[in-house]
Length: 449
Image 1: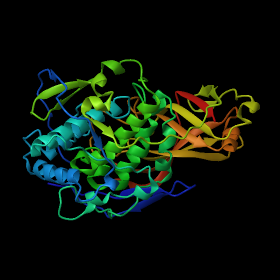
Image 2: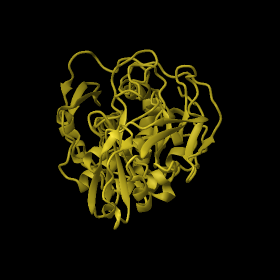
Image 3: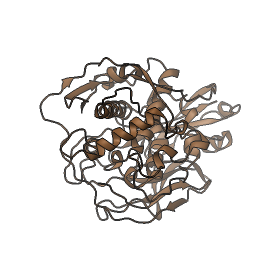
Image 4: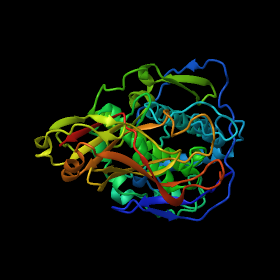
């Protein structure tokens, strides 16, 4: 069972934010959902006896690699299982859709995107998926791969996933050799290793920058089932893409040991089917260290060692307007400046967005882009509500920072594309007339490097 859908937005042209649309419309109904587990309390997870083995980059592996052979054999068995089996590919897809509140037939009131839940839930999801694959072939040395799209030469589908006649290949209209765009939102990945915890992981009510880019861009660029939250986990490349998202977190943890979000983060627990078809719960303390889950990564993402000279908190007169500006000398020796938009409210349910600053002289300044993944459900979570915000970091040239750090500067968001999920559930993002709305920001600051 497979689904091919939509138009594919694969990038934004430099400087303009104009969309590049690829592929052709395809008609497919979104999947309905069912509750993934029993209503009874889950049994706490216990660490199995397992070796700590490396997850490797998909681009570094050939079809003859022993782990690739295992992956293909395991996915072939998983794809053959009936929907009623919690180890089936359909059940794996459904698990992700359910906890994204992206079920067209029910409102689950669950959401593991748009907050600090994003990283630990997906790490746990990949861990149990990996264990289930191993159980299907009786070999728990199997490890998932990762799609190292921060490397320019690897910014296209890994060949082991595109070869014909094997289980890692998933139907899609986008040519397999097409690059993952926009490049700028993947080349900045090393700089994300320097972000503070709220900007990287998000907080209780807002997602972090890595989720908005490159995570969301990767989903929509690859398109088809990957391009919609409801069906994304039905494609094996989902687990390779999220392997690198998890590697981003592991790399960030390497540079920021022992740093976690505050609030209720430490109490979070998530429930999954394990490799023995047992409904278990796992906590953030269990997933904090990948070696506790039996894996490491072949390499960490290298960081750009840019020294922070100072941080400047800008006062907001309204949710979108700068009040008193900082002293001019605060920006005089900047080599680069990061703009931190904490709690930036997303103005629509889904799409590609361009953030702009408008100075008192009426000039607009493009600050950067971000994306949200399309939904097919009209359930309880609306990205435009207080449940969907992002702590977004955008890097700008010092001259741009000096121009916008002026009393009276306002911020706005251009929605470059959107899809009306309720009226047209079979279309992915379609290019339309850009919509401009004032930005609503919880806090605004500059990091001078």
